[in-house]
Image (cartoon, rainbow, N blue to C red; front, side, top):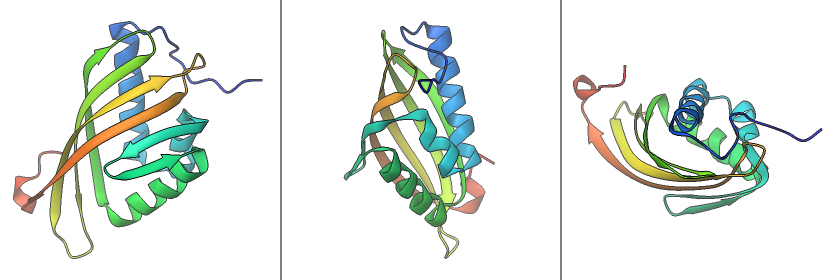
Length: 138
């Protein structure tokens, strides 16, 4: 049986927002083994200046990310969609092991296969050092 991750394309605004909320929930759970299953075996990513190919590289990337980004908290919001594509805006906050907090802002472009798995993810992200009392995502 083929892997599937509803909702499936073609997306409506409602189903695109469902997909975004599911992604936000999964990333906030910080479980690389579960999160990577939302992507095709041969998924292609650009995350900042890093190029990632395949589900196993996604898993390794997420393990590194959440080991470094302590107390990670993410919020995604709908930007636009088409048949099998969704664009989102996001921000997330995290701290490093010295206690310095950061807020990251960015945009992602997603492309899905017919089974609702993400084939491509292109993320542009900027980090801003913040003080602990400036956090918004608690």
